[in-house]
Image (cartoon, rainbow, N blue to C red; front, side, top):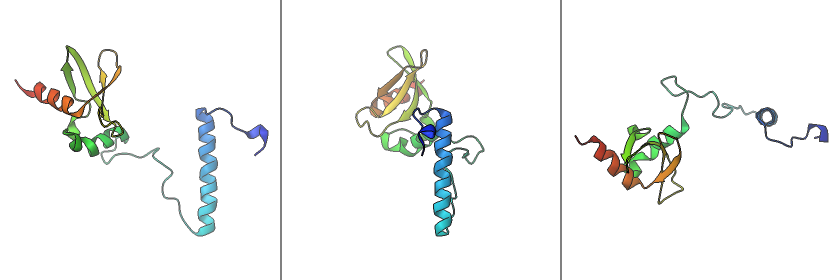
Length: 127
């Protein structure tokens, strides 16, 4: 690579250029070995219902039961301490506070325990 073509900042255009070069290198390697590239990543993938695939929602659906929640709880709202929150995801790398939420008025992110969120959601259902 010449210095003129060297990428020094990761802009979206530079990332597209890198991706194109990587795919071309992969195509060359696969053709050398008689292989075929079936997918070029997540871009353009759709869910079975035709809507764009939401990986955060899909991960939530896969992990929800392990945390005492249901897949349908994604983006559900609850109230605590007089403030409204919306569930935005699960991060299993945070064992103490795995549930990601956002405060509705300002969309500020917070972390909650799974037990606390499950209890708050159940309290919302009671008449």
